[in-house]
Each structure stands twice: as C-alpha cells, then as structure tokens.
Image (cartoon, rainbow, N blue to C red; front, side):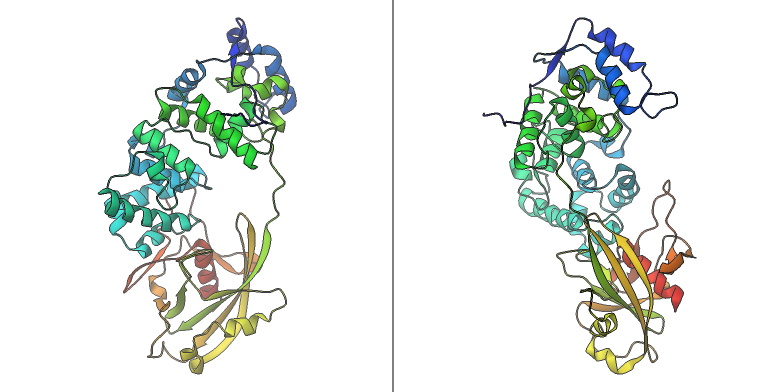
Length: 443
C-alpha cells in the first residue's frame, strides 16, 4: 500500500536510557499547574529528558494497553462491553461530551434495554428520551438500524465492519468501534481524540480534515493494531486522547508513550494537529408562534429531515433578515384557526447556539377565544395540555430574553425532557422547552 505523502515514520523505540528519562520527565509539573512551566517550556523540558530515535517497535500497543488497564475511567458502557451498549454509547458520544452522555445513557438504556426493545418502540418514544442530547438524526438512525437488525439479522448485531457499515447512521468509526470492542475484530478507529494522538505521534503535517490527512490517519491506525486485544487497544488510544493528549494543554509528562512521539521530539506538540480554518457559524433568523387555546398550546411536528428533525415544536419558520416577522408568523397559523384568533403580539427573543449556526428566535404569542375549537387540525399539528409540560427546573428571570427554565445540576440526571398527551410521549428539544417556558411566563 502506498503511504500518503504526509505520513511519518511508523513508531519509535526507547533508547537504553529512555526509561529513566521518562521517570524524570514524569516529575516535571504539568503546564498550568501551580509552580509548573509554560506549555512550551514544559514540552521542551520533557523533550530534553526523553531520548528518542526512529526505529519500529512492536511493544507500543502492549505498553498502551497496560497503561489503559491501570488508568481508564470507569464508564458504564465499558462495564457491559456487549455490542448493543457499545453501539449505543458510541452513537451518543458522536459530537457530544462524555459528561453529557453519562446523564442520558442510563435512562435511555433503562427504557430500551435491548435492540428488540428499541426496534419495537415508536419513533416518538425514542425521540422523547433523546430530547436534549442534540443531533437528532442519530436517534432516528439508531431506531431504524435497530429495526433492520431485528428484521434482517434476527436481532443479532452484525460482527463485521462491512455489515455494520450497512446500517443507518453507522460510519467507519462506529463500525470499527463495535467490531473491535464487542467482537474482537481487527478494525481500526479514528475519532477526534485518536486523530489528535496519531497526528502528534507521527508528526503529520497535513490538514487532518483533508482527504490526504484522513487517509494518513486511518493507515497509521491500521498499522498500529496488535494481533490480539484490538478492542482494548482502540479504547486505550481514545482514552489517551481524552485524558492525556489534550488539545490545548497536553500532559506529555503523564503520557505512557511519550518516547514514541515524533511531535514531542521535534517540538511540535502545540502546533499539531493541523486543521484548516473553521467556517464561522452562520446566523439564522426564525420566528415561533405560541398559540394558546384555554389551557392548551398548539405544537407541530418538524419534518423528519433537517434541523431538529422529527421533534415537536411551537410552529416555527426560518425567515430572511428583511422579512416582516409578524407577517411570517401569521402564515404559521392553520387556516381553520384564524377566525378564532383574539390577540397576537411579539413577546420576546431567544438566541440558541449550535455547532455551525446561531439561531435567533423571535417569539410571538397568540390566544384564541375560548378553548381549542372543534375541527380538524393539519396532520402534523396537535394541542398540548400545559399541565402536562415538564420543565427541567423552576422558571426564573433571565434578562432580555425573558423567563427561561433553570438548567438541571450537572451531577444529577436531567428531568425527562418530554411531555405527555393522550397519544403518548412527545419529544421537545431543549430550545423548544425554553421557548415554551418563555411563552408561559410572558402570558
């Protein structure tokens, strides 16, 4: 196989004195710690104490696994280690921090303990238990994949990367993680943490987001795989990136394979990995309508694809910067309800930041004469009884944006971000719960 031009030497062996040097380096205070060195000075000190020479070594995986077995975090999905919990955890962890996943993983697994339970549930139920975790396409794909596993694989999660990759929402990384961790298959993994470790380990000078950079990372990850213990090794690489080889302040003094690191030897730790310029988030203007009829509020299901796909919301629409918001909101009102509208006014604003966009909501409130009129609503609309709404904490004042629900403490599981109706569970995203709380407080 031809090596990408940005690849460096495969690995490095310790010189005869490097083990002693490693012990001396470990006594250097970490950058940023009390009495410690600056990041650059810390890196330089570690580099002087470590004797590094280019030479292939077969001991790298064994050393990393040994370190992992002693220092790994106690995470619930690691205790189980089966294919279903591994797949669920890896899906939740995509673009989401471990601390956040820990709050949702347990309740979700309790509701859907097996792939059969997940497959037999309604999409509404799945989205309701996912609500607040974000990136809702993951939940839709997880649900559809579970159904295919039951229908096409007799409820058994596939073992190979090829078969796993054919499931909705399962990419190369997730397939490799499940295949190696749950089934011991020799499959590499490259996520954000592993990419950072490999870019520094081999001093890859190309943009890791480019096609050449991705090819280099996957090739090096494949080359590092041991003959046995691939799952443990992959988890060790991920753990190293998550706890030691950090983005801004890497703890090189605590790295079990620092003597193998080309970036440390060349003084490039703080310059790697190379990333292309990130696109600034674009600003999106949206209007939302809180229409009440007695003790009920009108909600609408969003389209299955796109932002917040498949979740329920106060009727909303994206509009151009010069569009009249009031006129746009009037178009959100179903025609069958327009004769009953009593009043209609703007009550506040809410800014919601996502990874690639900033959404600025303008919230309008309207009220009908009496309760909801008898008649047929559009199929994707329904009335939600306000007494069934469940907010994650007391409503409090929050400056110019109006009243918002307080966030749940980080050390407590979130209050189920759902509402109940006669038709079962309804999922509301975190921003919709905030908008609803703002409307309730203002009216």
